[in-house]
Length: 131
Image (cartoon, rainbow, N blue to C red; front, top):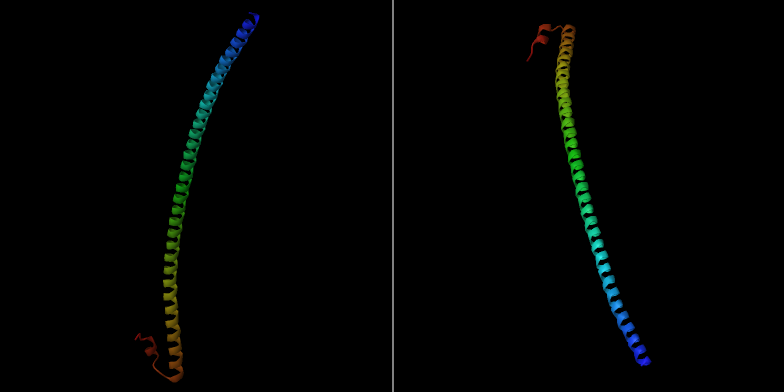
C-alpha cells in the first residue's frame, strides 16, 4: 500500500507539474504577445512621427525653394530694369555725342574750306552752303 501511495503521489506531482508548466507556457506566451503588441505600437508611433517630420521638412524645403525662386526672379527683374535704363542712357549720350562730333566735323570742314578759298582766292561764301 505504501508503494501505491508513493506512486500515486508521484503521479499527482508529475501531472501537477505538467499542468503548471502548461500554465507557465501560456503566461509566457501571453506576456510575449503583450510585448510584441507594445513593440508594434511603438513602431507605429515612430513611423507616424517620422512621417510627420518628413512632411514638415518637405514643406520647409518647398517654402525655401519657392522663396529663393521669388527672390531670384525679383533680382533678375531689377537687374534687367537697371540694365535697360543704363542702355537707354548710354544710347542718348551716344546720340548727343555723335551729333556734337558731326557738328564739330562739319565746322572743321568749313574752316578748312575757308582757309583754302582764302589762299586760292575763291569765294568764301561757297563754304557756308549746305549741299
